[in-house]
Image (cartoon, rainbow, N blue to C red; front, side, top):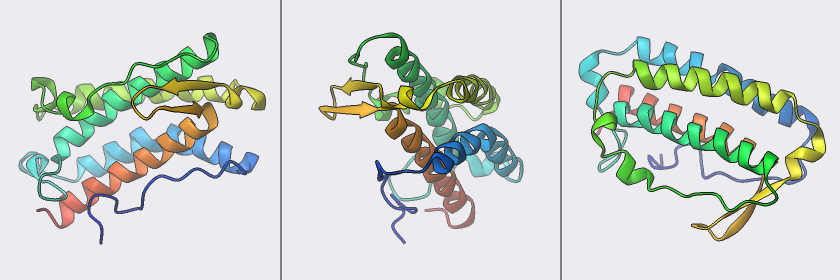
Length: 173
């Protein structure tokens, strides 16, 4: 098993169905609950477990999810309210080393995810299909990203890190 990409790398099929779009939104709606249930099963001592050598521990993953998904909400909003904005990239590895991400109190990050996903889902469910074709420029990857691609990327991102947590719980490194 590839511990870095246990569900594979993110891919985007521009020929998606309306059903897969709705399914991605529904997954994001339920993700904070799925994550909270998974974390309720583990001990506080397990929060330091990693999924691979050199990888983040469970606590860092949860804090990263809150950071990353808050950036996603802002990217959706910028793209819906500005004409092809250039988004602000951030150094996720450096953020994962900050004191708030080294903390084993997951409740603030879980509450953030719950609120962010609630707002994001309300936003996405209110969009018309053509809005998903709005795009932003990502200066780090040097590419244009449409909102449909961003939606599927964050569905993948949620599943990707949930699998990391599962590995860190069941087969830590």
